[in-house]
Length: 125
Image (cartoon, helix red, strand yellow):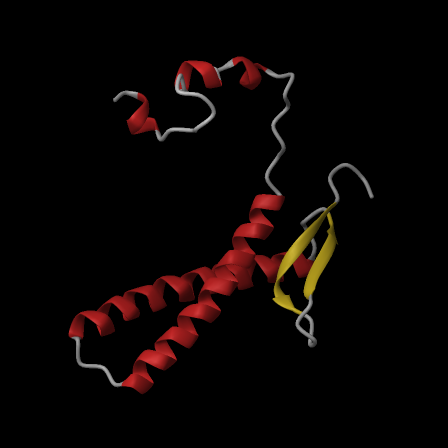
């Protein structure tokens, strides 16, 4: 495997539910198919989120409708999580020796209260 070849988590599972991976440089037919499917899954999740807000705001649903909505949201969340994992795994790894390593305040500068991390807004409080 060359330096540009990485294992990509695909946006579908095998027939027995196991994750599928693709090794390559990301320019082939299966990579393009995976890109299209990821985009469709993200679009579907956005539409489902809007639909869920509309249904819940109406406050006139049946238990069956809520059950179906929960199933669809769970499936969508699984798909979106897989897309996020796949894309996150393909992000370039920062070089600790590069200029980025020298930028920004140290942990001690941000957090003078020990080892508990603080949110940015809390750092100024």
